Amino acid sequence: MSSDSLESDPLDAAPLDAAPLDAAPLDAAPAAERLDTHRVAIGIAAAAGARVAERIAPLIEEADLGALWVNETPGHNALEVAAAAARATSRMRVATGVIPVDRRSTGELLGDIDRLALPPDRLTLGIGSGAARTGVLELMNEAIAELRAAFAGEITLGALGPRMRRLAAERADGVVLNWLTPDAATAQASEHHEAAAHGRVTLYVRTAGEEGAVARLEDEAERYGRIRSYAANFERLGFGPLDTVILPGTARERVRAYLGAVDEVVLRAVVPGDDIDDYVRFVERVTDDIR
Image (cartoon, rainbow, N blue to C red; front, side, top):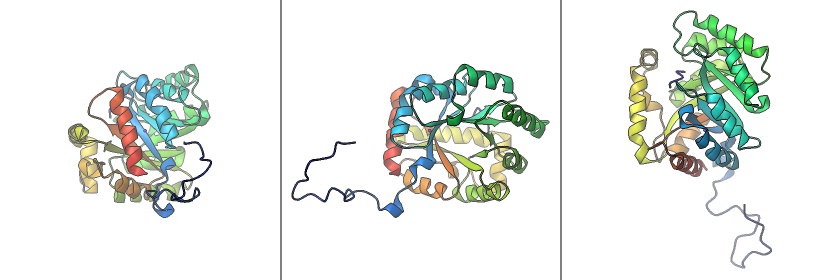
C-alpha cells in the first residue's frame, strides 16, 4: 500500500400498547442480517490531525466499531495521531496503515511508540515499503525482525503484489490490502489464510458518506490509477479503482460483501472538506448506514 496514499435508562413500565420490553425494536434488523460492526474500522490520513482523531475516536468506540486506522502522509506522524485517539478512548484499538520504513527507521518508530506511551495491546503497527524500488523484500524482512525484538504488539504489512503478500503471511501478524473488489479480496484473503490460518486480513475501502465527498473520491481514485504499480495491478486484476469504493447509499450492501471476504474492513474516510465536523458526520453516517 502506498503511504501517501476508521443508552437509555430502563423504563419502570411500558405503555399498554408498546411492545414487550425484551422485544427487538420494530426497525431492528433480524440477527441474521446484522453486520459484525466490531470487524469494521474507520480510517483517516495522518494529515487530518490529532484533533480530528481525539474527536472521532470516542464516537468509534461508542459505536462498537473495531479500530481507528491512520495512514501516514508526508510531514504528518501517524503514530502521534493514533496516540491522540488512544488517549481519548479506553479500549479501542488504534492502528497505522501504513508507515513507510524507507522513510522512517524502525528505531524512530520504536522511539515514538515509547515517547507517546502507546499501549502495545491496543496498537497494530502497520508498515510498508513506501517508495523503495530495490531490495524491497529484504528491507521489510529486516524491519519486521527489528520491530519484533522490541515491540510486543501486532505487526501487519501493507502489500500489493504476491511476493509481499507472501512475506506478510510468513513473517507478520497480518496483511493490509487496498483497492480491491469483494471478489478479489476473497481470493487474496483465502491465499493469506492458507499460509497463515490465524493472520488478520485487513482491507482499506475508500468511502464517501455523502454526495459532497464523491468528487474527492473520484479524484483520489484517478490519482491512484496513474501510479505505475497500482495501474499494473488494476490491469492484472481486471478492474479499475472506482470499482472498489463505497459510494453514498451503498455502505451496508458493500460492507456486507467485504466482510464476507476479509477479517477487517477499514472505511477510509473521504470527506467534503477538512473540518472536524466533516469527519464527525462521516462516522455518524456510516455507522447509521451499516446498522
